[in-house]
Image (cartoon, rainbow, N blue to C red):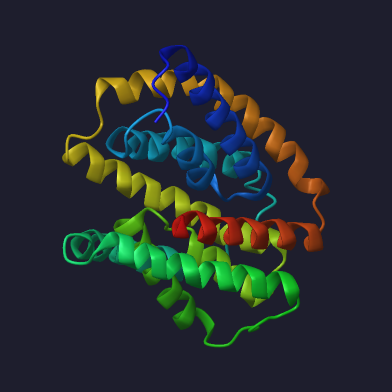
Length: 244
C-alpha cells in the first residue's frame, strides 16, 4: 500500500475521474477501476464503501443524461430478482471462502472474455425469455452481496442476448445503480460509512462530474461493434483482476 500522504488526493481524484469517464462511456467497470487504484492508498474496509458511494453518482448522472435514449424495457426481471439475491450473497459471504469463490469466478470470466473476443458474434438470442433474465438478475444480486460484482452477470447476459447497445446499457447500468443503493444501506447499518467516507466523496465529486460528462459525450460515437469489444475487454480484465 502507498503510504505517502502527498499522493493520497492525486490518486483519489485519478481513480474517480478514470472510473467516471469509462462508466459514462459504456456504463460499466466503475468498481473495477476504483479498486485497482484506491486499494493502493486505503484498506478495503475504507475503499469499498467509498467505491459504492461514488458509484451511485457515476451511474446516476449518465442514466439521467441518457434517460430518453436508453431502452429500459427488459430491466424489471433483472432488478426484482437481483434485490432478492443481495441478502443471499451477503449471508453466503460468512459461510464460503471468498477468495476461492472469486478465483473460480475470475477464471470463468477470463475464459469467457477470451472466447468472446475470438468469437464476437456468439449469441443466445431470446432463449429462456424474461424468466431466464430473472435468473441472471438473481445471480447478479448474489454476486453483489458476496463479492461486490453485481454488474458482471447482467452485462455478460445482455451481450449474449445480442441486444443493441442502448438496450444492453438500459439493463445493466440501472441494475448496478440499484445494487449500489442496497450496498449503501448495508454499509451504513454496519457502521462502515464514516466521516472520512463523506470527506473523500466530496473531494471526488468534481472529478466524477467532469469524467461522467466527458464519458457520456463519447457514448454516441461508439458503434455497436466497438461497444461490444470494449465490454468484452473489460470483462476479461475483471476476470484477470480477480485471479490476481
